[in-house]
Length: 214
Ligand code: B1M
Image: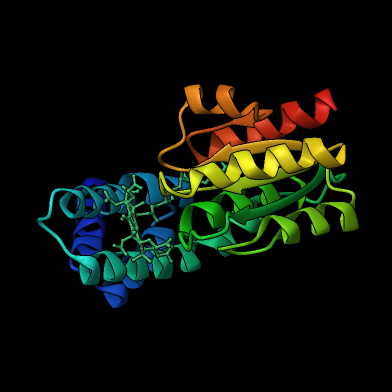
């Protein structure tokens, strides 16, 4: 039953149909399927397919926009369950999180924020397209342990480096975790980030290690 449901979810993203993606998310939740499994096995294959089709010119911006909206709407249905599954406990650390300046991709960044919140972190999600100065002002204001920087474009990844350089210049004591589809281990080493994960589950593990290491 799940396999068929997941195929329909993938199709709803390919169709850019947010009504269907939302209905399927509700259906899967009532069938007792875990939210993260729904996202990774149901919706992510659709987003990947649209992204790949866009990259080789088989899909265009409107398709990308509609796929993004359908994915966002489904995640909005699933997020409360993910947050609710986190138990009340001691705050593990404070995380300021954002997508870097010039980049408006928000879905992955928000998923990381939800996972961190449900795992016991206090998350200040500043949204997308956030200038370096605003990020660092928030880090100082809340005395953050970790600054999480998401970037989905090869043209905006460079902002992750800009932020890290500025942190060093100001002598701020905050760990930087980076992520986003184009980010690689090689890039992480080059910009001297403290942590990197390729997905939201891994981001929680890295964040836990970082606060332990601080
Ligand atoms: Co855009 N887009 N997009 N897009 N888009 C990509 C990223 C692209 C790979 C598509 C492609 O060509 N194959 C391509 C980038 C190419 C490149 O630079 N290498 C691209 C492009 C080119 C563009 C525009 C330039 C298109 C244009 O205008 N000509 C434009 C840029 C706008 C801007 O930002 N300035 C653009 C716009 C958009 C939309 C607005 C239409 C829409 C976003 C809607 C929204 O977010 N509200 C959109 C979408 C939907 C995509 C794809 C299809 C899907 C992204 C997504 O939401 N994935 C994407 C193709 C792809 O990724 N295959 C594409 C689902 C999400 C759950 O995954 O974001 O990877 P992801 O997050 C993951 C991990 O990466 C990781 O954990 C998350 C959960 O597992 N992670 C972190 C993310 N952040 C992390 C932070 C961490 C740790 C882990 O620590 C802090």
